Image (cartoon, rainbow, N blue to C red; front, side, top):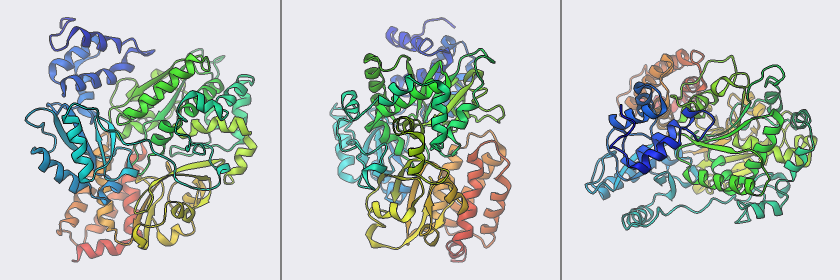
Amino acid sequence: MSAESPLFTPEQEKALRAWTRRYPEPRMGLVSALRDVQRWHRWIGPGAELFVADIFAVPLDWVHGLVTFYPHFTTKPSGKHRICVCRNLSCHMRGAPAVLRRLRAKLGVDEGEPTPDGLFSYEAVECLGLCDHAPALAIDDLPVGAADADLLDKAIDEVRAGRPVPEAPLAAAPSGPAEGAKLLTGRFGERELHRLEVYRRFGGYSALEKAARMRPEEITAEVKKSNLRGLGGAGFPTGMKWETVPPKSRRKEPHYLVVNADESEPGCYKDRVLMERNPHALIEGTAIAARAVDADGLFVFIRGEYARQKRILEEAACEARAAGLIGQDIFILQGANAYISGCDTALLETMEGRKAWPRQPPPFPTVSGVFGHPTVVNNVETIMMVPAVLRDGGEAFARLGAARSGGTCVYSVSGDVERPGIYEFPMGAPLPDLLRAAGGVRGGRKLKAVIPGGTSTPVVTAEEAAKLRMDFDGLRAAGSFLGAGGLVVLDETADMVDVLHVIERFLWHESCGQCTPCREGSGWVTRILARILEGKGGARDPANLARASENITGRVICALGDTVGMVAKAMLDKFPEDFQKRVHG
């Protein structure tokens, strides 16, 4: 194909070619280049695919695979402005189906179709990371807020008039425990905390200055003393992970550090709030961790829907670099709205310009990560805790939390509570304390259940919740997981068949398709639940659900497939009456 294309202006061609030079490896810019094409054309057609394949020197089927894999891309024209309504659990419970019906009536087109003037299209999406604004509304990946009729009309009218998308205000942290237990959110009352001068006023970058006087192994030792564990879901000890990176004296190749900001678990949105309110804590923590693992390249991989957080983080990184506080560039890459990219090895595949198919370890990323080089992947909150560890000392950090989980955790709380929001408590805090901080169950109703770590974690009953402590080991002993600390609260009116259907539909939609048990099993489970909800369920359906769950769990590469089985089994075991009531009328 010719190196020139009539599909793009000279300026657009220049911008696309620039992505091949933006990062250490050209293909790292491939997903971002396709995001530009989607934004300019409102879809990605065969000619555009061919041109992008040409400039990145990859086969055409490679690019077509990306376009048809990632939900951000469309293969037919969408509206200039894409309106997204979350249909996942917290938003579903707060009326997302009614919002979609309102949009259809207001715009006069079906979901996914552009309006006659080409200005708008709308779609239901699986998660926007805005569970505290349920039912969540976003336009062009910018958060608008909870979609009541007035907000919906105002947002559409503003954009139609040519004015910017009316973004929701920055989130604030509601009240919680004493300030001493708030390592990341204690200064949220400062409206300008995201600015460098304000962050430094409260001791910001002092931990990095201390780290500069320490040897890398001393930093790692302090983190090990702290009992800091990975706060993105796995809970693996952070210092131990850093120690698994092979020394450069043995393998002379670059080391990479990747911050996983692809927070896509329904019920979890704390990273969104932390990045928009306290971005310099992430920049400082990244610089300290980079020194500990001798990283040559620093990356933050942020989910596609977090356009505002990406902008705030880029501004903070520029401030820190201009002030001479960090010596390395921090490359910020943006995904394309796929939940599976949050899995560490699938994230690395996305960074390499591939479909987000999780890898089968070993080797683990610390040995063979981005383009085969040793790569440490830590989540946002984990990295943000590192300055607190160095500032206060590892032992003091450990004392603040539970026996094997040091420090605090920022919990996202949504669902049937009076005050959805993020709440920072010491690791091991009683779950009832979190519920009280969130104002208790909405409307004074009784608690029925809690999903404690995002919708991929098994449900616990109200009786179990009354005795739970929120740390990795406490929840594992109760048969569930802390996950990423996303609590979804369900009151006595919740229909667990409906709840499970929403969760399984999400997993089916987001399955990467690599493993047959997950790809097919998630669909079977979703269809059985849909049939039950339609009043067509049979007496054998609960047993069929249980059998499908057993045949998926443990037979897949990543945790998504295991989740399909685990969450269904927990619902069936703990709330059998909800299922029996449905199948027997």
